[in-house]
Length: 55
Image 1 (cartoon, rainbow, N blue to C red):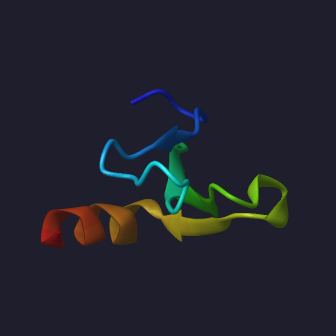
Image 2 (cartoon, rainbow, N blue to C red):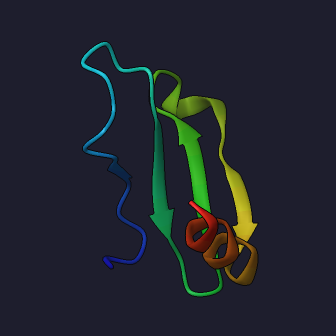
Image 3 (cartoon, rainbow, N blue to C red):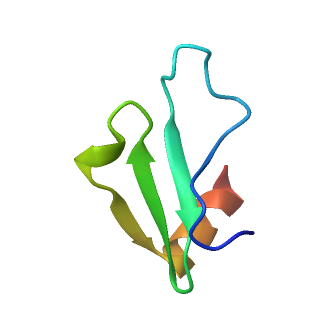
């Protein structure tokens, strides 16, 4: 993955109702695509990997 690059899921709706994710060295960032300046949530890398495995 490209570290630090925000990306949107291909499953996101056409109206922008989605979140964006970016991977960092030890964590993942998640933000609302409709409010990009509203801040982001940082999730520990191990917790993010566990979440993705359970999807």
